[in-house]
Amino acid sequence: MRTDDHREWRLALGAYALDDLPADERAALSAHLEGCPECRAELRELEGVAALLPLADPARIEQPTARPPADLGARIEAQIAAEDAKEGRKRRRRVRLWVGGAVATAAVAAVLALIVLPLGDGENSPAQEVSFHSVPKGVSIDATLEPHAFGTEIQMYVKGIRSGTLCRVFLEDAGGRTYSAGSFRYRWGGDSEAELSSALDLSQATAIGVHAGARTFVAPLSDATAVVPGADIDPT
Image 1 (cartoon, rainbow, N blue to C red):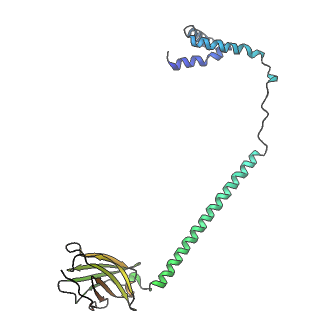
Image 2: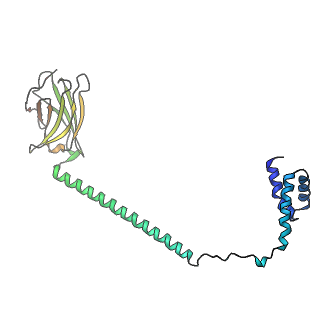
Image 3: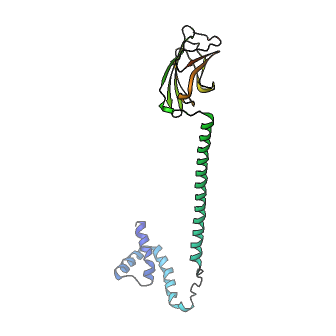
């Protein structure tokens, strides 16, 4: 017999003991009991309990008297409302802090831009191509400068200097102040092109310079012909 079939017979034993089974089901269970000692043993226990049921006095059975407090529902609702209000205050405080921090950051950035960088025409300035002259024989340095909202993008083209030379590029304004555009290390046989950027607006830049090794080259952006010589640079 399958376990599921046996379980169904055992579930019907209580109704059998109470004589509360339909005739056909009772006959089938009786047939099962003839060959199942386990169910017969369980039925004997259930029949003993069934025989005692008429002796029970319903009037003497204690009914549950514990009831929830009348204001329990109101207290739960009040607690939920308080938690919601508390969470709402936290969210509003976080929003205020975030907005305040964002405004403060934007204000600081604007002040720094006004103090550190001169105002210019930004992307309205025309791009410029610059060739450095009076460089050592076999050396060539060129640059292309393009205006952007962030400042100036610079493409540097260097050829012929000693491999491994550190090149530091800068822009200069009309007051002689210099603004770094980054640096790169030239490698002979590798790329001779470097992409850099400076925060100085191209419309405010008057010259571009390169510290290459121990020598500095500066080319004005108006005619790109001036060179400020420094110590010798080692050509390859």
